[in-house]
Length: 118
Image 1 (tube, rainbow, N blue to C red):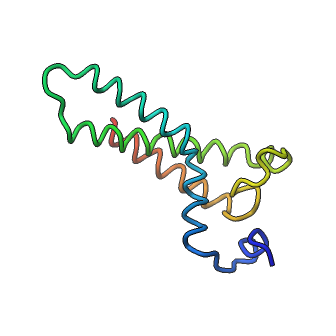
Image 2 (spheres, rainbow, N blue to C red; image 1 turned 30 degrees about the horizontal axis):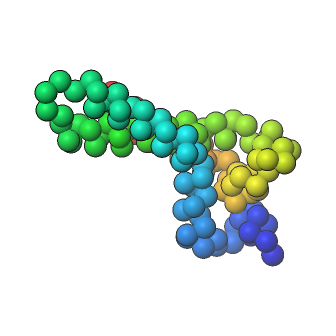
């Protein structure tokens, strides 16, 4: 039985595979580039000495917010992703993660990011 059918049947999927699926939902390449851009702006905008804790929390908040946006985008576009060759193997259209889990994950990350950056 393949992974997609196992997920839909409620069978256990290895933890490593599930973690990688959630990381993929966050669109790490795009999120990483957004965080790098924010941190470059943070550094260039720092007058005098830079606050390392504030730098860390800016990075963490940006990654949470960007990752949440990536997950919510995949939640919204799940039906289109299922029919496109390029995106049909993503965790949600492939059935490895339920839409409810993706919605909860995306909203949680986005809210955490907003609280940290707000």
